Length: 68
Image (cartoon, rainbow, N blue to C red):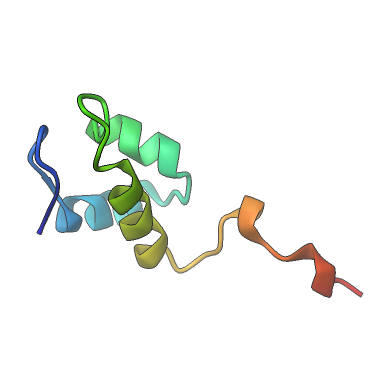
């Protein structure tokens, strides 16, 4: 399914970028693909696709309250 119509970027391309770049930084991956650089309406869906694909939890989203 297309995530970014302006650039013609699909979910598969985003998923492949996560794997090939071995990165969990949404800004870095979206910038490299050009996602959101035109109208920007795709950014929320693109980030969701990134987070769903990425097996690691981004550092900013880790729950530090469970540290003992």
